[in-house]
Image 1 (cartoon, rainbow, N blue to C red):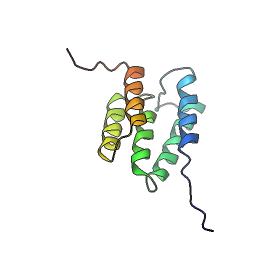
Image 2: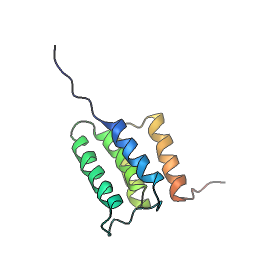
Image 3: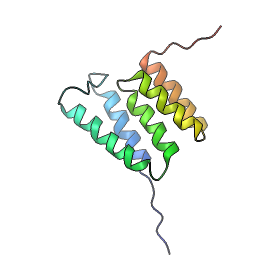
Image 4: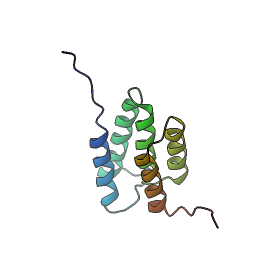
Length: 107
């Protein structure tokens, strides 16, 4: 029997969600605090995932950027979409936009 490595995307999502729930709502990456340290640690985990599942890693990076960076979130979700976006990914992108207060054009 061969062991197949499983990416820990759910654990990373849980960590991002915990940061979203913690005050202050947006993480200031320029300060040194337990929140900013966790924010950086999550980035390292996402970077490692990039080698195993780039599409999922870009989606996670979009959610991760959603804690403080509109442009970074949009770019990451666009990269995920280019690799094959799922319905869940589209929902996460829209939720991230709503959380960041992004106004989308439309009639």
